[in-house]
Image (cartoon, rainbow, N blue to C red; front, side, top):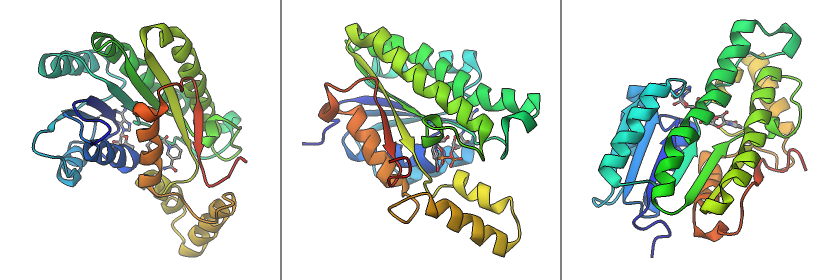
Length: 259
Ligand SMILES: NC(=O)c1ccc[n+]([C@@H]2O[C@H](COP(=O)([O-])OP(=O)(O)OC[C@H]3O[C@@H](n4cnc5c(N)ncnc54)[C@H](O)[C@@H]3O)[C@@H](O)[C@H]2O)c1
């Protein structure tokens, strides 16, 4: 029996990397409904294509920006009309922002990182919690990072924004426990996705690129980058019945990088 049979899930950032892997994983566990959200239309189409959902799973795509409150409200209305509530909300949409120290970050870049990573997560849970309530409870899984648990000297603004997601998750867990809504987050280390590759591509020169890759790998005692499916497994655990007594947790999926 699939663990998510009959459940409806919403996944933001579903057009690439970890959001796509999560959508694939949830569909493979029997969800009856999936709402895929991303601002990248082609990415959403590719995810739809990649999902080996049974015919009984109704997969709907919503191309929108998670910083757009009105667009998320409309997506929630449509999800309500289609499914009469949702059971799982996964907030994976995020950006990495500029490399470097906080003091060197422009105000514009700082606001951009916080707009997507923090405000976008806030807006998503704000608009979808009423749909979880309609089901008598459910599970929210936010995307923080190991950089949201310890200060990252190389990615200062990103680290600050993910720290906010970690504590937003804990506050939400306390806010909604009495409504049977569990709220947890995953804290990935370096996972091989387009976002991680962008960190290396920025360097251009192949030798410098290879050196930075090795430096990043060296942070992980398991000696490699993680795979998107390994994070999706952790999200499935937090989203599904196996974690029924777990809320407010920040789960590293990081090859031991902050052990
Ligand atoms: N890959 C890693 O090593 C890593 C590590 C720790 C945390 N994370 C987090 O995991 C999440 C997914 O990252 P990923 O590696 O899959 O990145 P990715 O760049 O491959 O995918 C991110 C997706 O989010 C979408 N997105 C970005 N801003 C958006 C917005 N404003 N509105 C709607 N969609 C938006 C993008 O279009 C993209 O499809 C992010 O929150 C990221 O911070 C990733």
